[in-house]
Image (tube, rainbow, N blue to C red; front, side, top):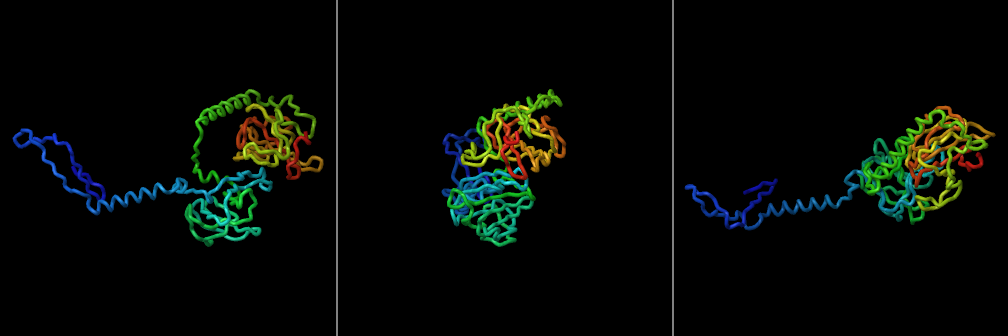
Amino acid sequence: MTTHHPGVRVNITSRSRSSTRTGPSGTPRRASWRKRSRRPRRPVLLALTLALAAITVVVGVPPAWASGAVWPLRGAVVRGFDPPEVAWGAGHRGVDVAGAVGAAVRAPRDGVISFAGAVAGRPVLVVDHGETRTTLEPVTAAVAVGRRVSAGEVIGHLSAGHACAAEACLHWGLKRGEEYLDPLVSVSDGVRLLPDSAAGEVKKRADQRRAAAAALAAMGALAGAGFEGGAGVLAVPTRGRITSVFGPRFHPIFKEWRTHQGVDLSAPCGTPIHAAGDGTVIHVGFDSSGGWRLIIAHGTIGGVDLQSVYLHAQGYRVRVGERVGRGQLVGTVGSTGWSTGCHLHFSTKANGRHVDPQKWW
């Protein structure tokens, strides 16, 4: 039998000596077989060689490159994405990747070089991807502005100047318009491998959300009745145990010393969260670090423009622009974002700066 493959003809023969065929008279006769070729022709060898070479090339490409998104620098993330609670606030608007001076920096995605120059004395590269754009610093450009680049293409080399624990660090940012995004999400293409325990954790969180929704429906407007939360300018927003105070602490996730900009109140998921004072809701949203985030502006109190901030909730039942009263139910305790368990992170901002919330309680 002869089978065909583009550019290749292969003869398949049987090695069995007992095979028989039926002759013209209908009587069985011994099958007569002969090989059409004793060795492959040169075109066959060439085709097989090219096929093996193609397979080697495909296998050798890193999976992330094949997906159209790559890491710009091979190294460990030494500081993660930590966006500010408000646009003008302090935070870390990208990730820092450890490397060495002179290391090759690659384009994370296809795009066009839209900027290559110095900003505040440090070399910066910007790659425009259309809807989003990547910022890389400090990077000495190896390509010119206007050049179209492909994911994985070397576009510069890491320079010194960004303070970190390594010899040098790349600050890698991602923006959509004026919104800062977590660049690590861009290289995953929405696909992440989870441990076997993930299914149980998802079910637990779903049960918690259903219980919280049922509690909200049952409590309604009476949920805040009788909740005083102390006699200070601001009320304690939930019934919980203080597990972390304002000030320096060893971060439970990033394992480094950082300033804790609020107070953590440990409480079961689903515990009601109350407004710390009269005010107007100015932000309700979700981000990777704070999870479900709420900000209430309380106006000027004692000459201070005061705001209260609530993080990691299961969700909120108020909207931007809504007026709320002290003790009013605004949401439920959760464990969203960078969190190690059910709790409320509560912080206060006086004239735009984080201050110890307990001084206002």
